[in-house]
Image (cartoon, rainbow over all chains, first blue to last red; front, side):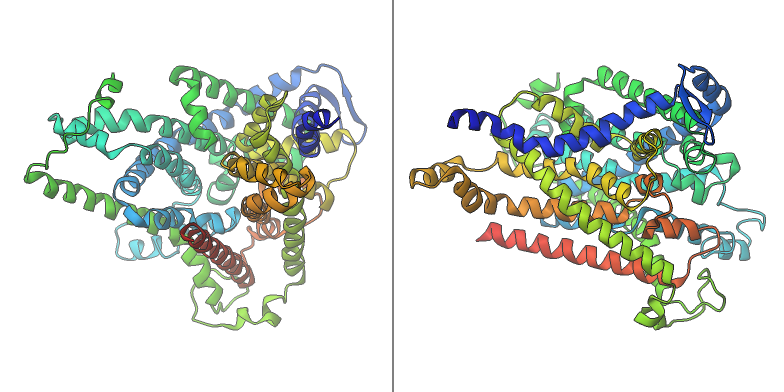
Length: 287
Length: 285
């Protein structure tokens, strides 16, 4: 009797939470898949008709926005690596006792609502704001110059908002490197550059891979930055999906678009994980 | 290839040549400045938000610096916009409910995963990993798809459901990490002294994992009160604090939003610092 109880214990513990995730994470995905193949409108309701045309319509109508999102996220990811790697490197190897403090400082933006900090950037970058106004007054920039509404502003916002997702995994990977290993390579007459390339970099790469994964996916599907900092010409796929779901109630097309985005991202993730070895990526991502 | 470099014996700790420390210092100074530049860049918009909570704008909206004032911090002014205050209140209630509920549900999962080996734990791990890593947009869109299919009108309840959903996995991950490191001999000692499994759990195990549960609650609370994307999809006509801000974006934000944002920021930072100091003290003891 007691043994049976023991064996059942984990299931009882898991059941409520597991059920919640099943009902409100897994099943909604199926509902979205079903919705993406339906036909109809808000007034008369939708019917499931294997309406694959939703997908072809979505692609022919919004491939520009989809490709733009993937490109913005790609540029953003490269910028993130350039920004995050030196910072993570310095904290991991030279941070000393202050390591937690520096990490905390990097996480500070997370204590301000995502929308609010993005709006704050808009206030800073606006045409007569504290950055552009003085530069225009002393004649460095022409009067017609503006930052808001440009791809640069949108990508800048994305990079700002997702920096911690890149810094932390790289830091975790670097922090685990035994300094003696680096020292050993130096003792064997490797130049600092060679020692970095042959010892530090290979050990840090799993962290970079995890960081790319954790920042590319949310950046490609973001719609807040482009809405607040961008313009018509920077419209990203997330904005289209959000607009169709919440403003025009064009659910089937919106669901199809969401699935296309998810499929593109998943295929990308798998190809990427295959190419680099899944285990390392998953290991670091799980941390 | 790099593996062979790794395994080289490291016992020969020869003192570095004289020129080395100097060059290293130089490189690290550049990196040090770089790190601080990034940190300053991260803090700029936060500083602007805080500064404009003390602004005294001439017009209705808070776009340009017009002089220092404390008036927005006075409760009478702070809560003068009733639908904004209502939105903040709604956000707080949702955060309390969803953080407590997700802590209860997530602790169960985290404890089971850390303690037992059972069928389906692999699947559960995959689902947890998916909820943590899938884009918020997709989670929000799929939830709305479900509600549309079931003809359920979104609102307060659906926001709470969604927030619990995306917080469970974070709590479970934190609790599991704690349970894995737990010393089982303490529990066995309790059992040897005649405690029932039930008593052992509540008197011995639970107090040990409680700090992890507490961190889980705090994280879930923070995730909930700041959440915009999923909430936007599941809110219907209910307005939370981030949703109110979003709605007011086009016209410009009143200073009250800056004060509330600053308060949330301040309290969050304070809690983070205090819990950090506490856990350090506990480690020392």
